[in-house]
Image 1: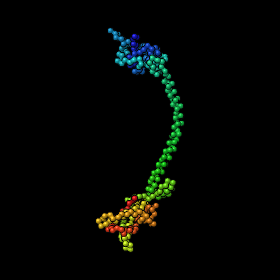
Image 2: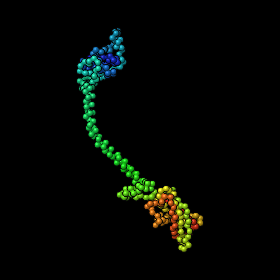
Image 3: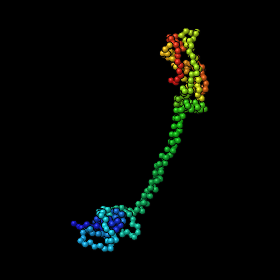
Image 4: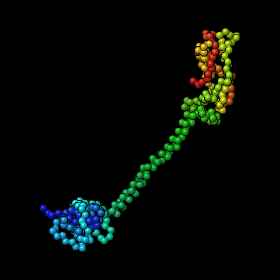
Length: 286
């Protein structure tokens, strides 16, 4: 069995196991797999065989002691086809005991740059239609969202900016929506009310009330709930009155209850089938 050969990197002092084929591949020129230094493997060959009286000379002292790390020949890389010139040594693709396949670093960089330069116009040609589509779609989406918000809050917009009501009405026509007065029960109140028997008709009650809109904008007319009670304040009968029941013929329901105004209500209630001692009157939105 052939005696193993060893060489030592002059830079980091790492010892490598080498093969004759590797040393013969590039005239002995190899690259340290530890510090990447290029050196002549033949010139730096060493023997690790034990010696009874090891000789120490000036050259060994200059080299220093071998490192304890022992690396195989796989950690070495062959270099260019010729002996490296003095100065910068180009880096090539690693190879062990076979002919390496490589090209100079400068050629690789040039090829990469040429490839990128060729791909850039093609990539820009692919992305330009997409960018143009996004540029056109974003304003359209913003306009659609604004239109949806306008239609969703159309009642509020029409109440606070009456000049916009004709435009909103035209927008609603093809969509089947309508502009209605705002509903805000907190802006409405019953200032006074009274329930009396009609002296001319037995069993008939006359309900009178004054409704007020205290809001600065027109509001939807509310419904009224009339509750008749007995002497123990227990409910005898309850009836709901729509705006058409108490304000039909005198109010414009489409425009709503005018801002800062009042409405006097007078309506007749048939209570011939009941006996009552009191009443309660509320307003609400159904």
